[in-house]
Length: 510
Image 1 (cartoon, rainbow, N blue to C red):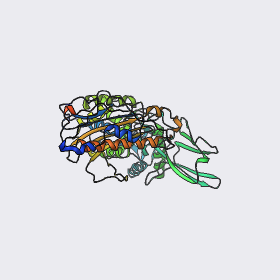
Image 2 (cartoon, one colour; image 1 turned 90 degrees about the horizontal axis):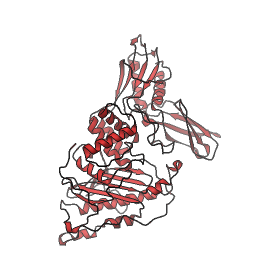
Image 3 (cartoon, rainbow, N blue to C red; image 1 turned 45 degrees about the horizontal axis):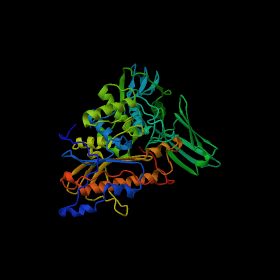
Image 4 (cartoon, one colour; image 1 turned 180 degrees about the vertical axis):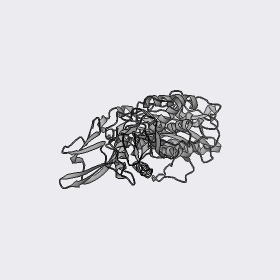
């Protein structure tokens, strides 16, 4: 990783130059206290901004407070994966035969081998089944198995999330359809016609690894039961209306992938029994291989759509490359923390996952902004999503003079933004803004994590803080001229008036 040679400590106060004759316009730029007060946000506002060429810290507040970074941490996960695996890395999913093939029949077992591909879908399995048929395979004398042990398994990324949210699936060495099942319902007389499918563009096989029952009750909307062979769901009839659909999480990725591949293979005339999980990977002949896209475009999509499963799988793949094997998701996150200290100069990264979904994860803006500044010029910025400031009417300024490439992050009562800002005069700044009201977040019951009262309103206020700070920095630090020491202002207040929560909602995308 590239590093900047000279780095000063982040200032403990927000620096604010005093306007001189040549730059009186700067006096009209709002100071930090005004930006925070005008937003009406409650809780902690932490930020840091640094010049990437000189390594000079320009402004910082609450710079060493550990705050959940939410999905902004995916920028660091992307760096970790690029560094350990390389931008051209591809993930391979294979069909492996033991015992040889005689007259189109596998003499031993047929094994679907997961290779850590987070983008595998039902259409990819369909193509693998088609290629297996083209190779002349018509059946298996032994068993059909799935191997998912290339990465450690976990039942859910964050166990504190509601059972039914699709952004919190199980994770293992194989994934399918982002480990989600498509639940759809349509009114049929007095009841409902319900489907559970592994839906992709071409293939949408029915799923046996997860079931749904409509129950006549007022609430809760969903219940979940973890049975040894499948995920068992019920849904309240009163919540369904005339029809609809949503994605539900899969807790057993290997069972799910095996279920769907067996169904698809049978549709092509290949006789397979029900899938079993393979405890170890045996020697055998590879009959079919599906290769993913290269890692860099996978990461670009991950950053654009904030895909939690992709972050966890590429993060664990990076740790496996670094260590040989990795014991668990948390162990993998701990290894990424070590890497961030070694390669990015961070001091106290404390991530418990790679996606930022778990609010036990903590990051400081000093570490985040400093780490980003140190790697400026590597392959991260081209895959970050452009972020546009908005005018007074709320319209994005797509051709505005301030250019921002960054990663957002959203949890209930947590909002984050971290990345790079280029001023109108082409000065490049790295920044991190982490805002959180952890007291308010702690009051949310687990069942209400999807849509808690007040969260959307609070998030809107956090976005206003981000916008104000970015506009301030883009104008105040436009040219590469540093504030004189005597221009440093007194510490600015971080407290803001309390406001009453409003009945709004926000989805946790991490």
